[in-house]
Amino acid sequence: MQLSLTQKESRLGLKLIAPSIGVIGILILYPILYNIYLSFFNVRLGEENVFVGLGNYERMLRESGFFSSLVTTIIYLAGSIIGTTVLGLAVALMMNIKFPFRNITRTVILLPYFAPVISVVFGWQFFFDPVNGIYNHLMVETFGLAGGRHNPIGEPGSALGIVIIFSIWKNFPISYLLIISKLQAINKDQYEAAAMDECGPIARFFHVTLPELYFVLGTLIILRLIWNLNKFEEVFLLAPNVRTLPVFTYYTAFTGVIDQGYAAAISVAQFVILTALIIFYVKKVLKW
Image (cartoon, rainbow, N blue to C red; front, side, top):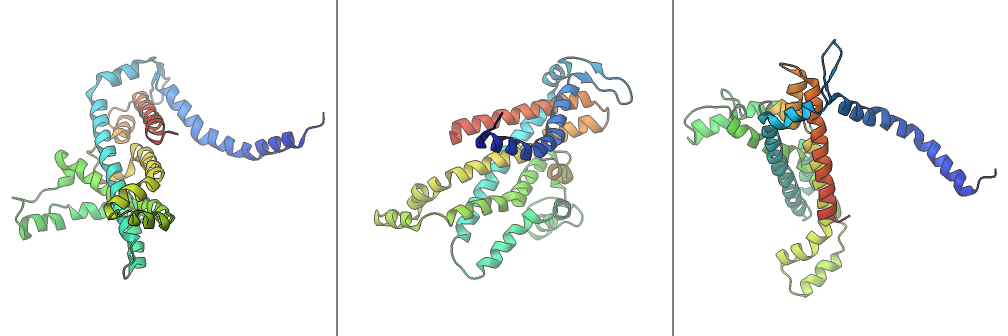
């Protein structure tokens, strides 16, 4: 049978993307499906797994550890996403104004994002070190704002806040880059027309700049939602006592009484939560 040109192109396209689909299936789809499979079992290392059905999910809904880590994750997500977006926007607006040494400043701003995680985490831990840290020296000896030396990273009441601040500082440069690239593409005629209508700087920001940045900001929030919900290394290396869902899953699967079936169920719940949040955000906020 003679194939048309369109059919030949379709078959060629399928052949070209087949290797990529195979790699995606092996590296992404298979681990997801196998993880879902394990969530229905009591996984015994070196022994045969025992099928428990929905037992791991029922246990997850009964125990307070999951809900505690879920609340911690929500606070971490809200603080880090809002912080990186707002700070990235503020820095982009400032860097869009011409001033001396602007190019050097733009380069320095990017350093936190591209610096290795382990090196900046070590720097932050040294900063808050109760013996030699700069934080305690300033708070106790210099300004007298604290009664004694302590380690805020090791205290439950302040560790989460420091992790959020660290995440904002480490990741705002990517928000800045995306926002400033859109800022520089906005037609200047819109600002001139707004100025002719006697709109001040604040009015021009809300009526010209912000509407133009709407989809860029929306994309940033989605990306940060995906990245931060799955963020493990930054949180665990800086403050392992802050148990977000990824950290809680790690402790369940690999430390203490190892329970990888229960950990698989937690990770499935995390995947479902992430998918639901993305669908809600895309439908209700971005209206795609």
